[in-house]
Length: 185
Image (tube, rainbow, N blue to C red; front, side):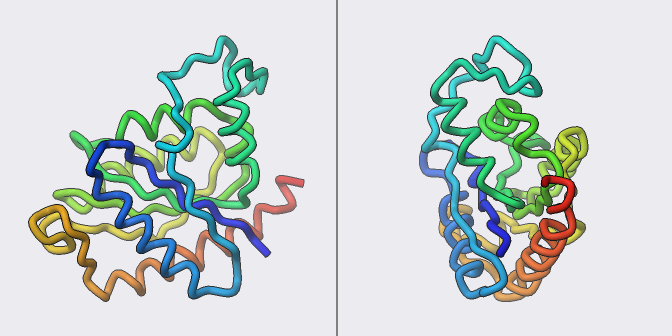
């Protein structure tokens, strides 16, 4: 069975992402074709990239990097939950991704984003990063609007139609994770 990490990519106090990630996790728990785990990057207390060697060398010297590497290595694929800040992704998410390299390779990734424009530009930026890390980003995505999927831009109330889109993300990430398994072996 594939193991999929649901990565919460915002660390901002009072973030909307926690409710979105919990919704993704709740929908995932209804499935029996993969196991899912919520991974909150805030729990890893990653400083601004502080490793002396490039991540591709996997010569980690810091305990926080080793713990992060071990956690990310556990998964066959990922669903990244991200907000959009200034037409891109949160710095904390980019930093967390950049700490590692080999751990991401030949794994599938899907996106659930939120923002004033549905997080579209954050996903576009993440697709470029995923490509560089040899991740297979799936076509399906969930775009949540701060204006229609949140009350007062803070209380998450997703439109029920997003459940279908989220299931498409799950289906594609699971399928691609299985297809890439031979490359990871």
